[in-house]
Length: 94
Image (tube, rainbow, N blue to C red; front, side, top):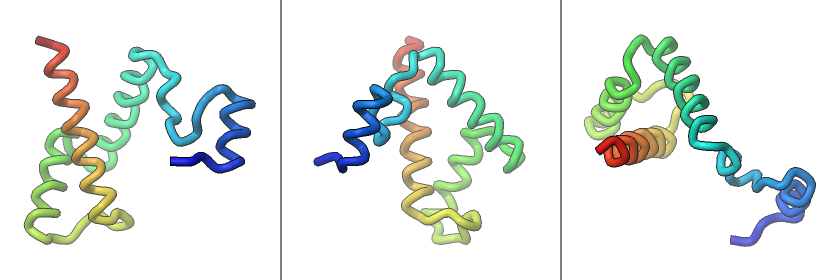
């Protein structure tokens, strides 16, 4: 996919691709950011992240109401991302 002129300038000036804002982070920095995001989500919804993801998956599959301001595609993306991270972490832990 071709980058826009603005994206090319940002890459040149900042040395990182705006379409991939986390690729420059170390594993430790990325883990810290993910943990901070999970804490904020858990505090907001009152559930552990894994439980929240499963509740979202159930709501999508049962065609139930979704959290306000979130589309089905965004929720599916969140579910997929969480499961990919969880799968990767369990694979590396073995």
